[in-house]
Length: 408
Image 1 (cartoon, one colour):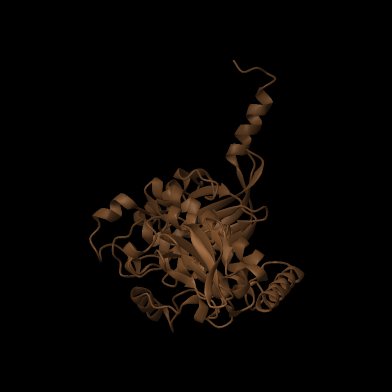
Image 2 (tube, rainbow, N blue to C red):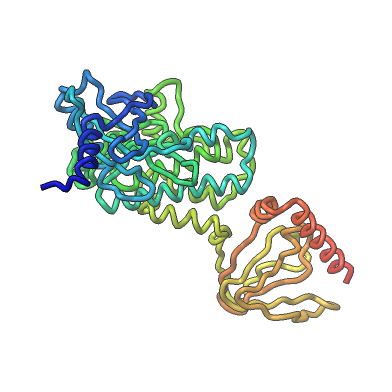
């Protein structure tokens, strides 16, 4: 028997279930259904309701795809995948499912709203952090055997409080099914402007197709355009099949792009999938290392008795010793004079990278050594990220130290 004190509460809940979702306006309309804002009277919250179009409601194929989308998304309990709350049918028999309502803007809208010209470093890193979060969502989905297959800026939502969501899993595929699919069978789906070449050829895909598309997000961030363009859809698709796109630093208006970031992007978007990062986790880790300043420099190996820099020769790069022992020496009155020995963690050539000129000493490896090479372009990017007075101070100090060295 129901306690009389509880009866009003139960009646209120039953009443809310009968008329649970109060419409609050259409947000968007797509090929399969409409997306509406609604008020969930049962739980007293605002949610998003996606409803299948009335003309598709009785189509078994379309209905199955709609339910599949809801179930696939519902399986991905990850912070960067919008939670699905409910799947049901309205009194007219039209399928719907509800999701958390996200207030924010797409990555596409964010990038297109930026002022023309090269990206400020802090803005670039904010945008790359979004890609890192997308990679996290992909890693989780791939571990569950699900491939997104439509990663693009319009499908990445950035919330008002820093949330990042990879949206629209409507054409997601199961990796196990893809591994058994014959090339050319099934329907070719996705967005040609951002898709991997094998997906454009309607071949079976794996995690590396999503890696390619995540790399295309970086390309879009740097260039403000998709990698593949054409006069129409067919032309764009042909460029996707051929993997034909201009390198990001050749697109007008991009300014100086850090070489390490270009290397990451080009590897992610390699035409052959075996040349890409093995999975979204590898791409994520490469981006994190780049933003932390790790692996930003070229690594070179030198052998015993090999000169790295030579006194009197021009130079504009510096080196950090990762391993090995090197000797700094000069010719003084025609005789080789040892100045000092250097080991791991020490730096040489720093004046040349800040203030190009001739080398003031020779540095020779005394044993096999590994060095990190710092170019003027790489250091310039780091100086540009500083406050203007700080970069100017560093350059001025370097020039004064060089003047003192050349006066000896």
